[in-house]
Length: 221
Length: 407
Ligand SMILES: Nc1ncnc2c1ncn2[C@@H]1O[C@H](COP(=O)(O)OP(=O)(O)OP(=O)(O)O)[C@@H](O)[C@H]1O
Ligand SMILES: [Mg+2]
Image (cartoon, rainbow over all chains, first blue to last red; front, side, top):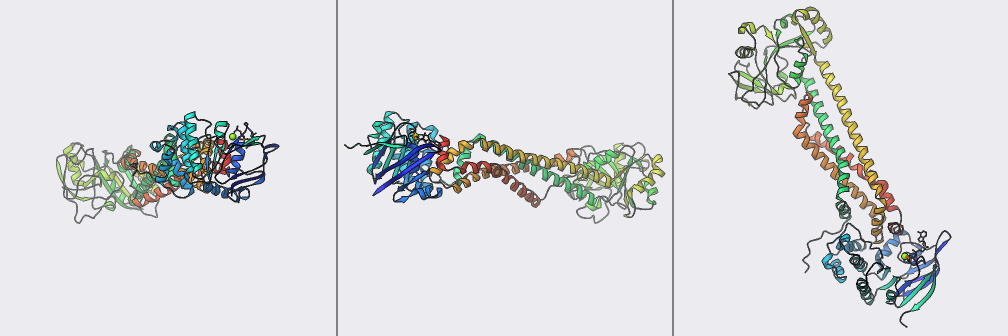
């Protein structure tokens, strides 16, 4: 069973092809890295998989469902039910505390459970910072809150767009450890990164160039 | 067990509230904008209503159509009547008998005004008024309960604001009086006046040495003659007749109450025009300012709303959240504005009326509630209306764009 199937996906902005005829699959519980130079279409692909954008052509099958046929409203539902998102820019709601930011994901997903939200923060080592606002947290801490928020609803697929881009080595390994834990618990993971070190954590690395898959590397070999 | 303090669950209201609370300066400014409107409209319209009621009450019960005063004392009488500012002036008394016979005049009654010294009961000077019980049609409409017997020379009737009750004793110029009755609130100078028999008033004048000569000589004077005119006759025509016959001999001036009251109404009209114009300006100003403030933060808000969208909020949830946010601004502005205006009115309404020199009756609770509701609703509209453009454009773009644009 595949969590994700990307079939002949293209995305163009006018005459610019951000993605050109991409084909790839991610098996259930697998970890995939996407690498490539700036502007090669990595974020565009992630946004399509993350139900935040639609391809110009082609289809994306997420957990057995063709998401390219869905309305924006349905995409919102799929995203909140199946996907956990981690961005390079720490997209936290500025006026909510760390804990509330995590609970927010629960709120839109199902039910707010404070204890569970606190547990998620504990997992990322931020139990003591639960009551802090994002601006009172360091970049690494904010990123960890994002991870706590992404994992709170037990998503089948975790999408991380340069999750360690802004972090120092210590924080980077903290974040990677967390991803490993999630991976071990069964989540499928797709990580966009510029760092070969980070990419190596995955089973497979896909390299994009000019919106096309230039190379597929098996990291286990 | 966690020892975390209780955290309130996340709701759409709470999200809206947290956003407002996080930007206290902005929020306060927006609230002040709405508050200016609610306070000015509520305060202004209640004050207008108080004045209107006061004048209407006065117009209804002031039975006199023409007041005769000594030449040059027209203003003094108006002031004494409306504001109760004590004054003393004299007119030869026999005029009353002479004009009684003029056709069209149905009632004539004289009054004698004496400005008291500060009395024991009261902090300020009072207007003491001697009135003719047999002919009076000016005071009696205001009496709370009719006098059962004639007022004795050692008895007085007090205005509603005089701090004395029936049975109490008050002293003026060393004369002691028993309070025999208390009047209804008139909103006029009568509220701070004390009424007594003509004889009592003449005796006081003698004691106070206000006019030289003995009491019999003083009896030749009154301060003002109140005249009621038959409906079929024009007060103006009556005034002309009196003028022709007696103006030179008696040196007279006239106050036509209808003219006086319609002048006041005219003034009140322009006052209410100012009040409502001001309120309308504040209303528009609040809308414009809130519109601008919201519009200037559209991009910032798109980013923040984009996060919520990515986390799974539907567009309708976001629209609702943003409208609740502006609604909260309006509600707080409305409540604070109305409370503020109420406090100011309670503290200063009478003072304002007095300094305007106009009668004033405090609005009833029910009309205050009605005005409050109207103001509340008008204020409620402000922020949601002013923010609607921004709310719609913040939530219009899909989440992906919002997220990109926020980058
Ligand atoms: N909304 C858009 N309108 C027009 N062009 C776009 C839009 N979004 C992306 N592009 C273009 O599509 C191409 C791919 O962009 P994308 O963000 O996917 O690159 P990326 O691989 O994530 O780069 P980076 O490593 O710098 O993040 C770029 O050339 C970009 O300019
Ligand atoms: Mg990118």
